[in-house]
Image (cartoon, rainbow, N blue to C red; front, side, top):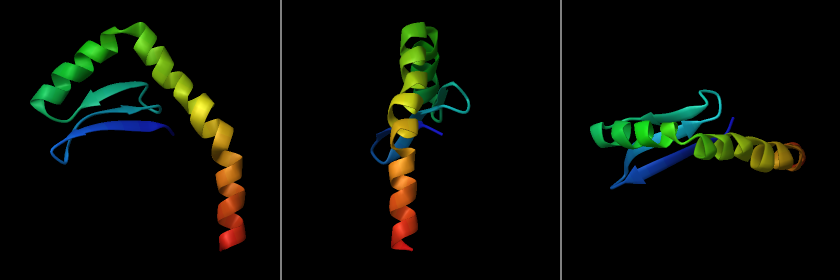
Length: 70
């Protein structure tokens, strides 16, 4: 799962989760930001592609590294 969170003053405003497939706001301001970002189809497709480009690309390396350390 790919998660990207945005914080201000240690307070999480909004988060993109690949399992949900969209941005979710956690404050009144964060809900407004998430609604605007969810309207942008190119931004959503870019964030969804991050799971493949970042997570799936590196998961085998991280998994192997954890198994050798334990």
